[in-house]
Image (tube, rainbow, N blue to C red):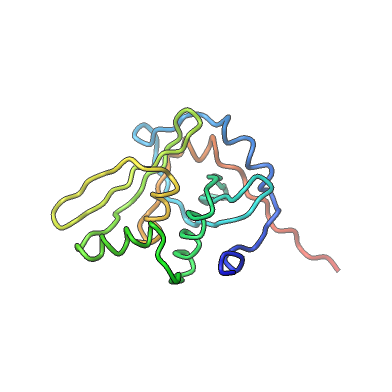
Length: 168
C-alpha cells in the first residue's frame, strides 16, 4: 500500500516530544521575533503520526491524522497520488485561478496549534484561520515559508538529539 511506503518508522526522541506539547506556553508571533522553519518531517511515533517543524536545532511536534500526513509527505517528496487529497485539490484550484500560498504562521493558544494561511489570488491577499496541519500542508504544496514565533520555538520546541557516531 502506498501509505506504508511514505513513512519510515522512527523511534528516536518522539516519545519525549509528545508529552511536553500540551504544557507549552501560548505563542503569538506578533509580539515575538519570527523564525522560518527550515525543514519539515513526517514521522510515526508511539503516540501517533507527528509532523516535526525543524529550526535552529529544535523540533516542534504537531500530531496529525493520516490523510494530512500523507498529503504533507507526498508534497515533501514531490509525489503525485493516484487520487487527490483535499490539499492537492486546493492546490489545483488556486493554481487554476492564478493563486498561491504566500506563507503560513503557526501559533499555539490554549494547547491548540493554529495556522494563519496567507493566500494571494490576482491582486488580493487574504489571511485565513486554519488548522495548523492544513496550513502546513498547503504551504508545503506551494513551497511557501512556514513561520513560528521565537517564543513558540523556545517553549514547544524540543532539542534534536545528535546522531551517535559509529564506533568500531
